[in-house]
Image (cartoon, rainbow, N blue to C red):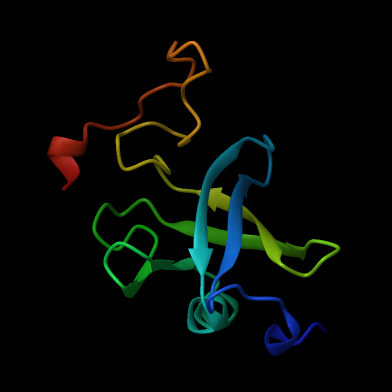
Length: 120
């Protein structure tokens, strides 16, 4: 088993990518510190570190749209984690299933699954 202390953190953070374990759709990108990764491993619910709020947060704590861990992978450089999840509701705070709902032309290609005004 890989020790989380052996991962390569930059400014105490590591990049975390959440991907749907069935469809393989990339849902979101965020950061984790050791505490977030430890809580994720302990609880089976994904936790992240919010750089803007400067605190730990459990995905879905206010929206109810949690991410249940199915499997976690570490990249070859040990500086990023890929978390295969079962996503409840939408991953994006704007209401879309994935945070990657626009292409480079600005065209919306994703689907909205909730109204943020009803949730936050």
